[in-house]
Length: 486
Image: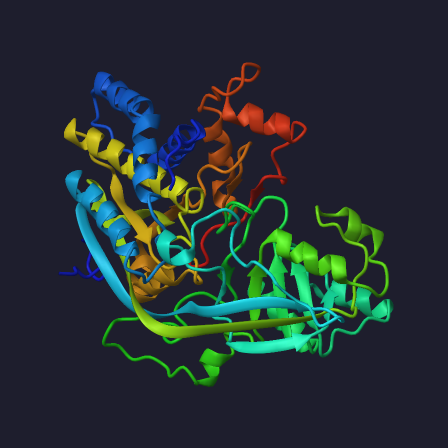
């Protein structure tokens, strides 16, 4: 391994879409732009490597990876996550790749208890379901109950106001309607481009007692069934106890009560709600009518913004504790420029089973490594060093990747050429990509080479992409979305 990059350390069963294969081909072509090496003077061998490079995709192989990775929940820092660590590490090792596990001890957050109830004027109480509908109980299923990581513990009781997406503009709209959220609980639907942490911080600034948040529409991230969207409310990325340096087990770290640590977390509790439970609260609201735009912009049955006679009581108890997380890193040494690194990564942890996020990407990552190993067995070597990175604890705030980069910042700053991320490789119809501007044209050229076998009308992914956007692929679906440390 290049010096200072690592230190050694002693329910989903359906077949993925063929798009998994297409995505991996696209990534292979992009990473190949930075790493491919062909022996000079041997055109037949060049063509052979190109053919192997592009034709060795196997959808059934990717399906088997995905099935293994999603056989059980694997939240970062929990015992079940160790099985996925072992699975990825063993896969790389069996391919003959130089493989390392890199542990960090970081602050994570887990739920202990949560409840939400509606209290009516006739003294009746309705306890609202907080979990996905139709699943086994949490202890037997292995799932962690829905929660917001790093939310403070607390019990709040008050009237409820609907604040749309929880943006400053939404609160200004409420103010013009004569609605004040001070001393109330706000209910917010996810969306509007704000992070959960930002939504809760704004609500806190407005005087709200707590935040209930629900998702509508596509709620694939961190959710399934009726759609409870777990997530983090911590602001920023990386371990809050080691800002700017790697969270080594015996390294220096800030105290939990340190001001720099506390400012990363909101000061009021929050919880995610399933859509059905959120709708019961929305149905109870009185007060001014919601703006027509708010009523028309989602699937919620929304009439009034609040408040009303119904009171809501919600309690959240959580614990923040140090937990050990593990990145898995595999290396293919470059033949001509071994000190120039092309990194390809994806996180491995998931709030639940993680079929889309992240394991459609992890399965793709594993298959790309398999195909590179196949090329190497036939005599090929990359021009530059390729580093495969399987990150841990991304869902808590890009913790695994950030700590690794902080640990290796000088080396990476001098030697890293490009980073490719494959988080959600397959999610719904269509093709979407995000990149720094330097990669725009490369993505366009690569997608022109990959056939779209889902369509009988157009020939390539690029043409399908262009057709979906009215003969324009810029700027609708190409946008900056690289990891924060690049």
